[in-house]
Length: 230
Image (cartoon, rainbow, N blue to C red; front, side):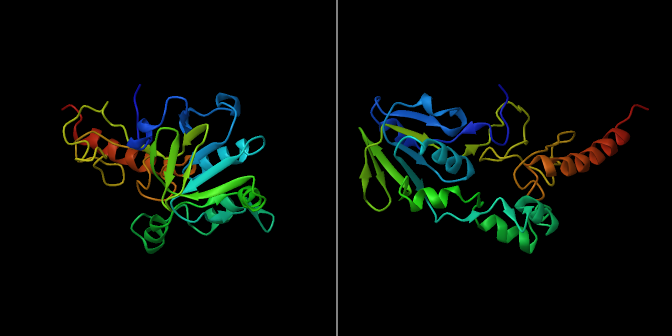
């Protein structure tokens, strides 16, 4: 099936060194706790998906949550209003990627929305661990040199773009990333929408993809005007 900006689940290469009895899932394949065997679960990666999965699993089993950086939490509401509403009002969602605000946001990992994780870690129902650095047999190794033996691992380690289905020379760079300026490809007649930070923070979100699509539509209209049959 066609991929896209989030088309290929990313799993570290050393995951293959884990023993077959250790169940492994990428967060993209996780649906419910009963997919996993009984016993402790390691959730590797603490973006919003990893945090939400860890919180759900902590209801009835021990959970380890590994993160490369300290976790930054934001409440879902502030002063009786959605945090997302505040972010929109403050212009954060519309911040262009190369603006002062946009560059500052790109340097920082996305916050975790909701404070449930703070309580679960505080009460010991979730144990925080530093980044996973290796695995062998039934044990997983962390950046502080410690090791754990989970019954299952969920890799909440993000995605790679998958543009292999666009068989157009010059559409992607040597890393497989799309070549574009605000979604307009250097390949004539090719356009993108929905890419992370395509132009603003919200480019990959429903609330922002429409603006980028409208920009691309203007260029498509101009392209068709210039290439209309005589």
